[in-house]
Image 1 (cartoon, rainbow, N blue to C red):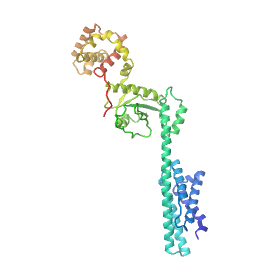
Image 2: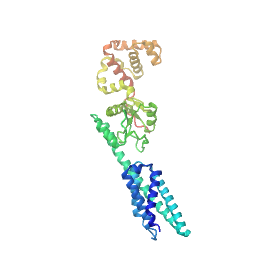
Image 3: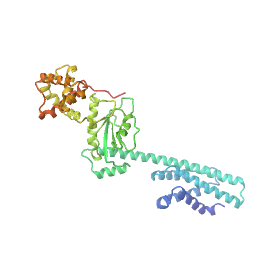
Image 4: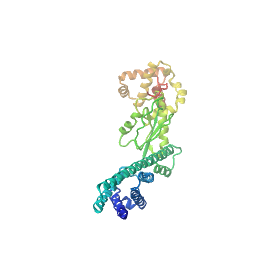
Length: 386
């Protein structure tokens, strides 16, 4: 009695699913329309053919719906669409069962048996579809992660990659190429502790246990608060300069130089440190051996003093040069009286025989003093924070 009406049932179910679930997507996409039609056709046929079987097999149906779930995942549909489609299909089928029950005077036991069989079949279909969807999502996530890793490695390559190579790899990784990036170098996590890896999806991460780092798109937008909040849970961090995306390697290089100073205790480890705020110190660090070899030529009497006497004199001379030779401004910066500044400058001149007023060597002297002041008492390596 059901078989002569199967084609009408299939068309009605297909119409409801297309209109109310896929919003015309299936109608506009010939390939997906074919998939939907095939699934509905085979489901209806399976239902009717299994009515007379005591223990019908649902293996073929499970394969069919697993494929449908995987296809939905590939097309970016939400998993609840399949559930909605099955619910609508069951409503159409039940309406037709009731109509046939009146038309053919079925006993209520027949109607109950049909509906029970229908809901059992659709429950198995829904489970198979969900599993297919989840498996495909997992495969897609693995593929996306692989492409993101390749993109990350491409961006920090030197010389810089070509723009079309970046665009192609970004497309495969489902990553929107930003205008700028900043690299964030991280200290390796202490043994037995895993840093937080909950990051925004646009951040590219390398969790190498010896030299982890992040690439953060558009780090200065909308403001520094975003980056500070992002880095809070990941531990000690050094933020490289913001650069065009193709120059990410430059940002990473300077982030690592900055992190090295953090590791030596020269820069603080209790908050993210930005390379751009320590340009002079980083420049001096790259010339450390040159400074060690040449500073004694004109600062030897100062360098020979005990640390408690040496550091105030060096810090005063550096601040005085940075303040354009103004003792009042220098005193305000150091929080000492201007007469204290002048006394220290006289003491420096007495010890070294130099007034350090020659503009020709001022930049070299300031870089040297920057290094000596910041490294005083800090020439040690710190361990990662526990």
